Image (cartoon, rainbow, N blue to C red; front, top):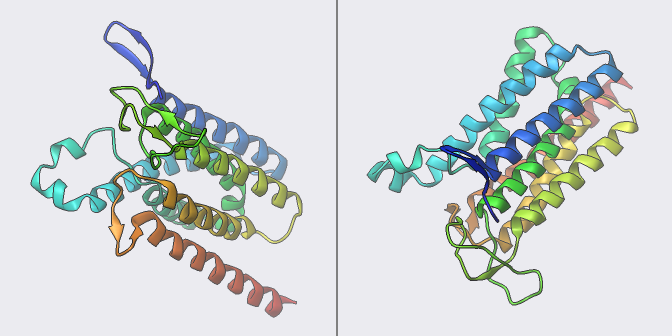
Length: 251
């Protein structure tokens, strides 16, 4: 809830950017370690993480612009800065980028997504802490002891007790990373973690959206992210069915 961590002359360290950076480094270190255990090249991890970061930021910004399209068309400049991202846009473009890269290299996408997804969830958790520091993605007003009052200058309304949905989301992302790591210990066929990631993240995000109060676009009665969550869970189900049929065919 204090986004400016340190200022030295014209240079300021913002909490949101700092947490994003910590998340990327944490994901990279975790993925390097997992690659070493699997005998996969660490340079492949580095290339894919860099690709995911670039594609993810572009996708998250693009989906944000789509959700705010009428306002963007009226005055685009305020929306082209460092603020304003929709995580699902980053997930979609990140998965697409990994798929294209693996096809180009002749690598197994299932193997690499299993390797990278715990790190992705870990990075998302740190990113949500950054959201809390910046005040974006805030929750509904509340009179409960969980309420947090953001200061003036934050992206959240100042002086009002709000549910810290950013921290709820961060906790969920860290828990998801742990679940994926535990599931991965039960070595099965490659590709399982993508199914679990889509199902658990999609379901959790759908529920969490009921507690948010920031403007983030709607599709009918649902928020944009709730609408996409339905497709994420459905995609998990379809992938699980496909894996089951493939196992039957091979077994």
